[in-house]
Length: 635
Image (cartoon, rainbow, N blue to C red; front, side, top):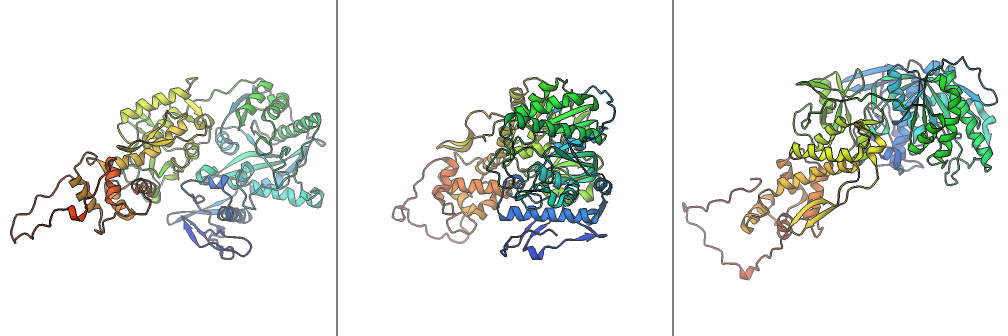
């Protein structure tokens, strides 16, 4: 059980979210199996996605992050954890935790280690992905990977223990065993690390080397979903770049004001970063754009200095991967002048669209999960009729049945594309390579598509051609995300209440987001089918059938009952959106005028009671009844 709560004596109302129960802090409880704490499969989504982990900062979000960190630190203390899947519980012991703590060391420019002889590798460079996910992928491919943690010099783990919004260091501590290594350095520095009101555990001219770090979770875009088994990497190097931003509250402005002194300080940091990687035995280094976010260091300057330093150590590394900003990588590559790695594509066979759930075989909706192979931790694939199928989807709600029907697989729930398209696409990049192949994205769009598959193919090829300018059939996640402007939706006229797009989407991100919105459009199509040109009599009769209580108004629940009959996969968001469209005066009910206006776009006038014809006399028993109107949507 997972607890979250408030500070200062306040409390939250208990709220259940999946495996989590958010309660008062003095009621936090943890389940144990064989003496190991049970970790949830992932953190709970809020409002359809996990962006709250990185962006939201109210009391509930902070408390949830605090308790997630406390639970993980308990696992570090116990030496392992348990994960439940259905009625089963699997226990995992950390294999490298003791060696990591024993081998943790601080390296400084003043006391540089003696380096081994260079193997004289022909280093290649690449860009994309995240430092954590890329490390797991490349280590599995046979590289000895050292990846870089952009650390806070003054708070071990950044906001990992305090519930702050998660950036790279908080993600490192949430996804791996890194935090105990950082905590060891903090405890060892003691009062010697005091700098004014701050405690500095990462020296200005040095780094922390943490060997044999184990990665146990995926990234925050998936709610830190547990991996089927931890993946050990060679090392994590923690470096703290200068802070130039006076608005940062938990770190002083410590960048030298003299440009020469500043650049020399940055150079020394990178010298020790690369020497620490060599000391760990790594032959692959992953470098993020350290300090180029909230700390406001110039990515072009930092990238250039990084490249100039790396140029002296290229013989030690087979591969150097840069993550983050393009200008950071471009500046580093120009300084190093190393060739770019030509990676093979993950999927070259054309995707045959998947439109039905892998488990229940019903039509897919907006709440999707992608199928993962437990053994490899990668996307589960099938080979049917000679065609490769890179992605298999299922309803998020069908995930619990996988253990019974397909125990070799697990499900990774995806953020709702309509609410968080960026996280949705990053989550689809399951192996964390930083690239989305053409056929991967084709399958994503096919799963969201409503309508003729031929139209989807035509639209897809048109949109792909806009972005894939080098025709290499792959895009970085950053390229896919593109300009951050969501598609603008509008009404296309008084007689057509469907939502239309103003202009073409400027990126595939916007297009995917539009396709997610199309589930709402498709539901409207089903609800209004055959009624847009119907007579007023038929519209009145349909209204009366939808008005289950007969009070002359259609409530949200009455509309939902109709829509669910039409489409069992209809989401609450789609129901709410359609109800708001029809409820023009926003009084929480749909009257007959609003109903007709919503269906046809026309105004109607209900005759006054005086103008209505006299009520007909009751029919005699056995008299013929009028023929009922046919063709109403739901009887």
